[in-house]
Length: 311
Image 1 (cartoon, helix red, strand yellow):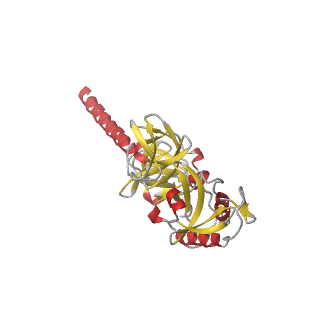
Image 2 (cartoon, one colour):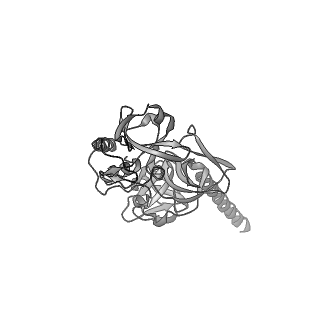
Image 3 (tube, one colour):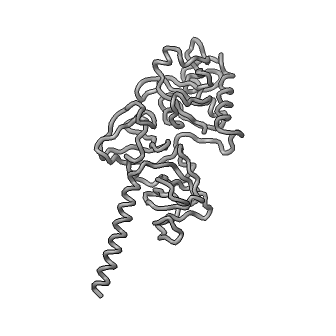
């Protein structure tokens, strides 16, 4: 009998150890997306990818999860700091998303905060183990974060989530951009073109410092006004607008993208890309709203980054 109990103990211990190791490994993997629960009656988080596996907890409709990887018909996810499996049929997964995931801690000894979601993107600063950042976006395996007033990107395998998303309200969790309940028809690229075309009708309108209406715009006020006409609420100042949307590479610019100019983590000017290497912006009090080439030296030398609001 004692021998039998010993065998049972060893098996239970081994299974627990394997599950612990799997959970630990999952926590340090590069994440693949943000998922939203589409099951009206809620979705169960299970210990294994099987409908007969132990239920860890149940997520509500609209709740968000951090997707680690897909295993057959299941996703391994982090839901409210619990790691387990959810069936793929009941999750909508996005590789880019504005979502508030709360604070996270740095695990390795030293990690890099970069301007964009790429190891080739310029370095903003470095963080040490134990330091914390605020996560408010996800972009193809990278978390978009705030750290001491700077906005940048950190690889998702280098941070450990510390909080449940506040209220875990799924799509409503974004703190950056509020999209319209019923937007314009067509694809996101079509909508971006519509927004860029709309913005160009204000060429020739006056520049007014602090202005955000057709009676006078400053650069960031112009961007805020244009996006508001399509139901998108973005931040007010150029630097604050760095928290809106998600980073796109220079070679991937599309009409409707916001372009930032400045140095380091501060934007001193913004405009909207309209295609063919040009952007529309409220330039200054002498010119008002104009269309300018990105190749003009002043702007080429101060190009900071670009973010996509739509799509």
